[in-house]
Amino acid sequence: MNIYKIIPDERTYGGLFFDGVLLRKTLGRQLSRKLTSVTASIADDWRDCDGWFSSLYDDSDIPVYPDLSVWKGSILVLSERAEACLKKDLSPFGEFLPFTTDKGTFFLFVPHVVVDADALKSERMIEEGADIGPAKIVFTMESVGTNLIFKTEYDQYTSVFCTEKLKTLISKAGLTGVALSQDLV
Image (cartoon, rainbow, N blue to C red; front, side, top):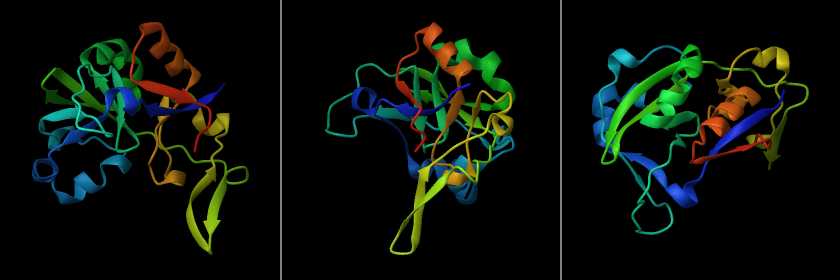
C-alpha cells in the first residue's frame, strides 16, 4: 500500500486564513499554538471563526474555493461537498470543526492519529551540526495499520499523510484542491 503526503494547490486556490487574534481568543493561546499536535477532541473548545482563502502570491481574489486544502501543515480543510463525501470514512481518525467563509461552511479535519516514522529508514537533515528537519520519511505498513489519514511527530506535525484508500475516495468523488505526493518530505 502506498502512502501519500497531502499538498494544497495554493497556486490555484490560495491559502486558508483566520483572524489570529480571534482564533487565540476563541481557543486560548495554548490550544491555538498546539492545534496541529492535538490527539484528543477539542470540539468542546471550538467556536466558529470566520475563515477565508486568499492568494499567497498577489492581491488577487480567489473566485472558487477548493473542495480540499491543508491548513497549518497537518489539518485537512474540507468544503461541505468534501465533508459529505468523506465524513463516514474520516470520522474514526479525527474530528471535524466547522467554520464559516463567504462561500459557505467549511470544516477543519484535525487528525488525532499519530504514526511513528520508521527510525531506521527515515533520515534527518543536518546542517552545521543542527537538525533542520526530515530529509526522508518512511512509514511501515505495520505502523500505519488501517489508518486512512495521520500525522507524525517526526516532522513536528507539519504534514498530513494518507493511504491509497483515501486517495481513491478523493479521486472518485472528483474533489479539487490538493495533490497527493509519494515524496513525503
